[in-house]
Length: 342
Ligand code: SAM
Ligand code: DTB
Ligand code: SF4
Image (cartoon, rainbow, N blue to C red; front, side, top):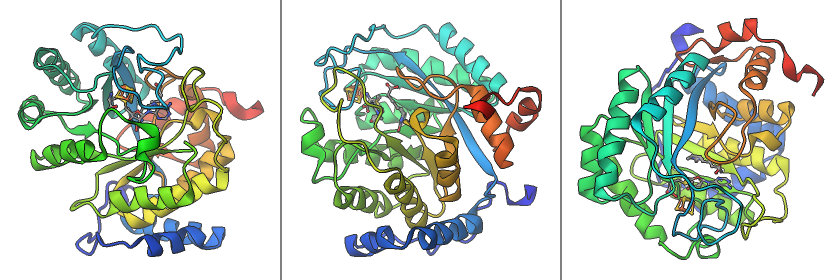
């Protein structure tokens, strides 16, 4: 199967003209048909037993002026979160070394900013360069960026910029009022034009309807170029945020969302992102079957918890999955199967 790793078959015929009706029809397929079709498409492009591994680090935590209703880092909600200023480069390097030792191939640094100040970017540039020097791919998520700021990140050697659309244009106003959907599209367009890989997805389980999930996926799939990486987050409900207590999304609907994302964007890495801690092993396995082929790995996301690395290694072991370009599987052979009794 090695030959299939990173395989990108002929992607010239990728579509960028999906109608809402077509996407809705995919969601309505019988579950087995949907998963079979998504897995078939997945296998045409990727090794189905390889998953890309990213580790996250919050480089600046809390006290964010924005009002994103899901986010524990907004200054407007009392979530008990301890704020922290921008980390020093050495702290970031130490965390990146640990992530690499655990088998991550990409290191993603997130900051609770509406948009970075130019002097903050000096430090972030140094972080990007230092993490690259360790042989890791780099990703940052810093909020809105101007064109000159994007060029600075490109010069620093940044591989990926994460900026999510979060939800449909129709539901967006229910979730965020301090910046517009168009602001997000503008930042994404600067990133794309600068030649930085785009990481862009959204959050489900925020009380949106199926039509919103359809519309979010249409926005992503109809971009001029599909994002290279598409994180699908399941809302992590944090006490104190307005979305705490939101009605939980049905598990099958979440898996359907992954499958439809896979079918619409066959060449993209679809990331099973936040919310994995609330998912059973069986649910995660179905997400991998539906075409998810990337995860956040390590016990912390930005401020909330993620499954223990041991638990992921054990699950990968059970499923015969290995890390893309890494040696997670080797480490797994030494790790006890801690999740067996879960
Ligand atoms: N402040 C920057 C921004 O918003 O663009 C970067 C960091 S922000 C925390 C990155 C992304 O994390 C958000 O766009 C959102 O998609 C995701 N996120 C934040 N809180 C979340 C939660 N409680 N559950 C799921 N995803 C969440
Ligand atoms: C993404 O789509 N999800 C990540 C990453 N990109 C930056 C963030 C998830 C954050 C979950 C809540 C928290 O840990 O603060
Ligand atoms: Fe701030 Fe980003 Fe959280 Fe929104 S998602 S409140 S911009 S840290």
